[in-house]
Length: 244
Ligand SMILES: C[S@@+](CC[C@H](N)C(=O)[O-])C[C@H]1O[C@@H](n2cnc3c(N)ncnc32)[C@H](O)[C@@H]1O
Image (tube, helix red, strand yellow):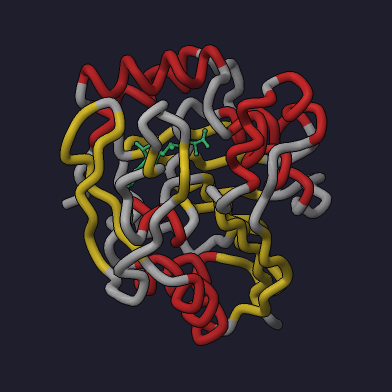
């Protein structure tokens, strides 16, 4: 059973405020980098794993996708996504990524933004994804970077509170981590970059993209504090194709 921390009221309030004020890394860094990797979506059938408020689903439809199945384990996130969407070709489903078994019909693109580090069995998900794509279909996803999930204690700071360094530790010790984000005991799963890539290759994918996105120039100008993300990579972004 996944944790479903986005249905915890204090966490949800904090996360919603972060996204509404756009003070996180999504708009400044992760979303533009992921969208750059998208193939032509005209007519595409898409699955979004961990869709949150449905931003990607609406974007995909606005640039020509045929339909999007968007799933999330959090009822709060799905309810917000439904409120923000007026489109019968987006199907929001409240379901865990781990337990979801798509119909055999096939997707042309499966996307997941910043959700798979909450999933314990990454390999099982990759195999389901592979089986649910059409030949030549794409799997594009981002996760919290392994240099952040390995030892999630955040920046070490000097007596003035300025960040001195980001301690990397327990890198090869894959598995569960308890972290604090809005609330204590948020569970995430650490994997090495090697695991993220080799599981894709072993499933039969061809790796197309391996990215560690930086804040855009525009984002750095508007929010100079984002430059801290040049000191360690916050996000890992991968793109792969199901080989024919
Ligand atoms: C950081 S948010 C990202 C939301 C969205 N993809 C975006 O980029 O705006 C992570 C999302 O993954 C969902 N999530 C986490 N673990 C999940 C799981 N095991 N199954 C389905 N959804 C999950 C959360 O409920 C949350 O909405």
